Image (cartoon, rainbow, N blue to C red):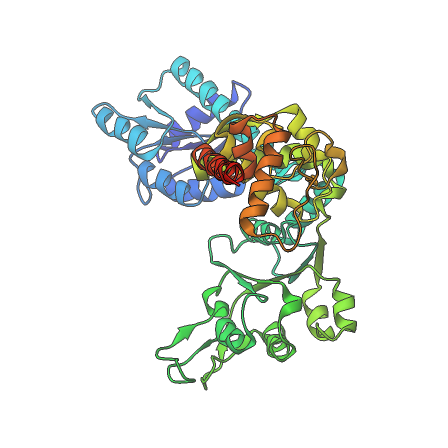
Length: 471
């Protein structure tokens, strides 16, 4: 264990150093708080033993500065007779580990050092465990333990500390924005803004204003100055989602930003400079987009400094249980549900699906299922309507051909909505063996609504029968 001893009295400082070294601990000494700060930052002691009253920087100021520098090893403060109240205040208000009275009792000091050292080890072990988890199965809001995801997590940690542009590719719904946010949160810019701009969600006429901002009166409707995404992200990260959907004219203007990070607001004359890190994403093959004339080659090469490709969910099925746990935890917080897990049959069904919509599709199905189940485990009947729970390996929605009175009428073009609805309800009741609660859950309606519909159909049937009898 490494102990930093801080005391302005040279003889007492040396006495403590010799005593602690006799207990087989490494010791560094400092004559006041200012010297101790330098030693703490450069040598990372496990425990600090400091006097309270010292010139320049006293013990309390030392604790406060260590906290500001995010250097907070367990700190034991030494207090003279009559300073007990100050020592207690230092412990409870300033985060000291504990205090020891002068003259220092070797026995008491040894016990306190051992306990403080144990706390320091626990803190370090916890930090190491979190670091290992980030390498293996968790980075930000992303989870996965498959080899490909471990490689992606390692890539995120490698590129995050730099200012290099990053291009993220992968199908829709694979979590490209989560990767961008993870890069930002692991970077030196993590305490600065993260601004996301979806290039596919904006018409071309508004794209330039959204990205660069505009001056008052620069066009019809510009009643005041507007700060664009580039300025909003100053000091932080700008995420350009669906880059392949950005108009070619805007890509030419973006190129200048990528070259020297200068721009002008729409209608503005002043040259502005943005300190931003650019992360872009596309669900298209970038090289194919270049050939199709949808992506400028020079923009691609500017952004493709570091590339991360996200595989589709179907290529990492082993990660599904981890992803489900993470999604359910989030959904419980969002909706106030109490879902503990998914049933084994449900997990088998979910793991057998192709997931063309990737994680976004999985989340949507789990969100609806968690609302239906509300608590406990999600069962197969809670899954999205049309799910083939009996044959989940098909990976497709169940085709329903209703059977009514032995015949097999099909829902087809030409029917009214009411007719199709009636056949669908009848077929679902047959599938659930007339379990109305289960049928209502599958149809996504309340049991009260289902009963109302059935009463309506019953009244219609009675009316038809009555008319036939009259005839």
